[in-house]
Every structure is written in structure tokens, then in C-alpha cells.
Amino acid sequence: MNSYPHNYYNSRYSGDLIETIEKPSCWPALQFEVREIKRELQAFEAWELRIGSSNTIRCASFIAQSVRNLGLTQSYVAAGHPRWLDHIYANDRSTSGVVVMQAVLLGGVVVWNQIAIHRYSLAHSNRDPTTSRHVAVVGAGAAGLVTARELRREGHSVVVLERGSQIGGVWTYTSQVEPDPLSLDPTRPVVHSSVYKSLRTNIPRECMGFTDFPFAARPHDGSRDPRRHPGHSEVLAYLRDFAKEFDVEEMIRFETEVVRAEPAADEENRGKWRVESRSSDGAADEIYDAVVVCNGHYTEPRHAHIAGIDSWPGKQIHSHNYRVPDPFKDQVLAQGSHHYTEACGLVKSLVSSLNSWMVFFLLPLQIVIVIGSSASGVDISRDIAKVAKEVHVSSRSTSPDTYEMLPGYDNLWLHPVIETARIDGSVVFQNGKTVYADTIMHCTGYKYYLPFLDTKGEVTIDDNRVGPLYKHVFPPALSPGLSFIGLPWQITPFPMFELQSKWVAAVLSGRVSLPSQDEMMEDIKAFYNKLEASGIPRRYTHLMPDDSQFEYDNWLADQCDYPRIEKWREEMFYIGFKRIYAQSATYRDNWDDDHLIVEAYDDFVKFMSSYPELLPLLKT
Image (cartoon, rainbow, N blue to C red; front, side):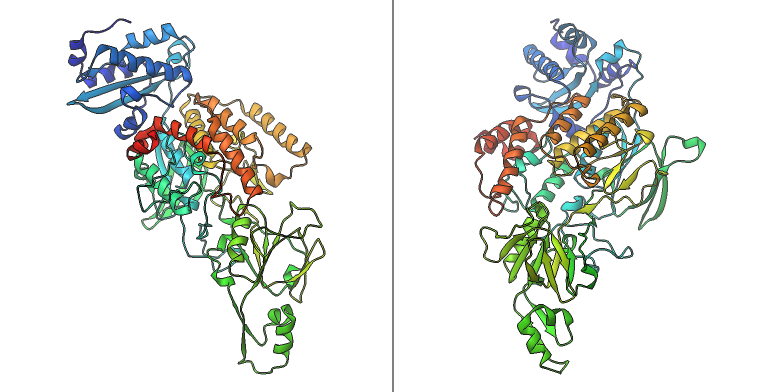
């Protein structure tokens, strides 16, 4: 390599360097904030980047080694000089991206001033430079936060519209519930959180976090939850750490509800999006180049269809409105209460012998039926079993003759689906068992709900299929101006959100191209046909079982020239999922994958600047 004299770097001023980098139109530099740069670039001795391909990482390492060889300690480093680029390209012509940076070392304090991600191959093609767009992100949950970060990293102007008063989305706990326990009334005041007080993550924290911002335990901080499967408050704290680290909140408009988003109709704004919102400051009507929908799908409940339920006299509630088990501890009965008179033979005889409306009876413990055996059904049934007389879980994934007591409890039974509900308060299961129940709890999932989105029929929701969408993200007729982050479920969510948003950001900038509209539609049709041929119901379109989620994640990573999902993360997810079914009552606190935890924390050391105080822990 041709080394430059020490005094050459001392004489360079940062403005001259930026001019050198930005002058060629084929190198549209993306400027980053100092805080982000300090995260992305480690001290030279521990330097490794997780942006770009392995070739890009090698280029970054090459530059770092060159800087060390020059012995620069307090000087300006012209790492972006074209001769550096020429050398890199001459040594590795497969390089698809080149990382160019300027480091300023003053008084021994490292101040990273600028970093730009360049597509070096643009200099050898006829492609247009990357484009900066004005983008509206709907929602400031986990998906919205990482989408905002990735869009800004790619050079876009971002506004996040969040109807709540804080970040976190579904991870924001509130004791408030909706007045309609089934959430059927369209005029009801909507509570957007579905988190119950005892909720803990059902996948380990190590594989749950964003790929370059470890969700590591912080045992030294007494206010934090150090468990592998932490409670919801720890997840919210992690998201707040993330937002603070990347200055995401400055892009968010809180207490701002999107009431309408549609393609702009006027000729002047053709191809853009009109977004109407309202807040305490009044209504706003704005034009954006693109809209990214990150509003989640845990607010609008789905319900089980039960024969005879309309005449069944008991109470019904959806898990969306469940917070604590206390309401199931006891039940006051009054004469004239038809349900409880019919439900319990002893109480029926006693109540029917009395004629005073002023007589009340206390039934110490309730009988509850929980419909659903997925994550919320498992958690809530066990939560309620601690205080209720009996809990009966109805699962459609069991055989029709199933009737068994679940381990660890003497009042918790597993049944198949409900056959019918009767006017006398009884519920008959497919296995022939009859239970007189006080309450039916619907742990039956949620609907995708996009009341603000008007696509003139280009995107519809049909039996919980949002479509047509290319790879669950882009509607062909409206791409790239409209995209969706976070629709797939039964996944490791945060890394997938991150990869989806990287893809969207790169497509919007023009750095990555989508197939033609016809090609995307053909891909979608093939996907739908495959589901149908496999007998998979339409409502499971966005479910990603088995290996499909990591195949999908890695496909996204390849599109963005980003490292694929770590093997330890993938293995940890699979082992954890098997534990859920094998030891559903204890899987969060008993595990046998310590070797994967070691691998995870070895990987976390690369990103120690996320949690500098964790370095001693991560090294042990």
C-alpha cells in the first residue's frame, strides 16, 4: 500500500475530505449522527462492522489495519481518499460496497465525525444515485423504532406517527381495559395494549434482540429484570435504551393518530402518499414519498365461534382485556342471577328456596374455560388456576378424545374444542365432558386491522390475510411507496423487523431493486398456491412455522448485503420452542442450552458500545 506522510493527514481539514467524498455523483454519501458512528465503529483494536457483506467487513478491517500501521494517534485520518478505495477495489473486485470513514483523534479522545456507505460498483454502472425520500412510519413500537433507525441510516427523512404518549407499542403495560370485555363494540374506547401483568417473554432474551444491539442482562442494575425470559417491563426498557441510543424519539410525534393514508390523487403529487392525522394541536394533512405501516396486530381480537353461545348466560372476555387473575377469585351471586342458579346444583337448590331479592351468596372460587393453547392461553390459564376453583383449556390442536390434567396443577384440565354451549350454563366439549362454567376466556388471537389505510382495493384483509404482498412487505401495485413491517407471527420478532426495515430502506433509496410488478404477483400467486396445496388455511398466511422464518430472514439479509442470522440465534429459538411444549410450566426458568448463551455473549462483545458498562460481564 502507498502510505501517506504523517503531516499530510494533519493538513487535511474535514470539510475538504467531505468534499472529496461527495463530489462524484456516483458516491452519494449518507451522513450519520455522531452517536451512531460511535456505535458502529469500535476502537481500532476491537473493530468489526456488521454492515454490508463479509467483503465489506474485510474492507473496513483493511482500513483499520492501515491506520494502525501508520501509527496515527492524534491526527486527521483521510480514510476516504480515492487512493484507499482504489487499493481496496484492486485487491477485491467482488466487493459490492465500500465503507469510507473519517476519524478524528483529538487529545486521545476518539470522535467519529463522518461515515458514509458507498456502493462502489455505482462508479462502474449506469444506475442513478441513491435517493433520499420523505417517509411516514405509522407506529412507534419495536417495528416502528427500528424502521425509523434504518430509514435514517439509509439517508431518508423520517416522521414517526404514534397515537400513544410513549414508545413501546404492545410492550407498554396499562391496567386499563376496554369497557366491552370482548371488544366487539366498534364505538368502544380502544386500549391498544394487550399485555397482562404477569407476562414474560416466551423466547430467550439473547435471540430476541436486534442483531447489533444486544438484549443482554444487566444484573448490576437493580431496576432491571435479569432473567433470560424477562417480564414485559424489561422489554420496554430495552426498547427505550434502543430509542435513546439512536436518537429515535426526535423523529416521533406522540399522541398523533393517523386517520387516513392514501395515494395522493392530484397530478402534482402522483406516486406520493397523503397522510391525514390528528393530535391535540389539531388536524394535519401532509404529503410523503412513502408510508411504512408498523402499527402491530395485537389490538383487534379474534373470537372463537361456539354453537349456542348467544344463549349461554355466563361471562365472556378476550385475553386483550385480561390483566390480573384477581377477578376470577370469587363471585357474588344474587337471587335472580339465572346463570349462577343454573350453573351449580347446590347453589341452584339454595337460591330457588329463597324469595328475597336482598339475599346474596358468595361463591368462593370460579370455574373458567380458556379457549386457546398458544402462548397467551398457556400463560393465562396457569395464572387463573392459582386463584380459580377449576380451569379447563380448550385446544383445537389436541385429539377429539383428549381429557387430561396438566402437570403441576390439580385444577387445570386440557380438552379438545367446545362442541356447544347451553342456556343452563353448561359447556360441552368434543370429548363428551360437560362443565358448568362462570367465564369463557378467549385466548384466540387477533385480526390485522388497518382502518386508516385506503388503497382503493389494492390491499385487502381476507380472513386475516393482508395481501397481495410480496414477501409479506410490498404490495406490487403500490410499491415501493407502501410497505408493511411485522406482519409474520410465531417468529423471533425484533431481528425480522430489523431485516425487513433494512430492505424497505434500501429499496426506497434505490440501492436495492424490486422485481417488476408482474414478477412480484407471480411470486405471490405461487406462494398462495403452495399454502392451498398444503391445506393451510388463509388465516395462517403470515404464520412462519418450522424453518421458514430463518429462510425468510436470510433472504432479506441477502437482499440488503447484510450478514445472515447467527446460527446460535436460530438454534436457541428452536430449542426454546421445544421446551415450551415439553415443560410448559417451567420452560422459562429451566434450560439446557448454556453453550448457546456463551456463543451469544461472545458475539455481544462485538457490540459492547451498546452497553459499555457490560464489558466486564461479557468478557467473563
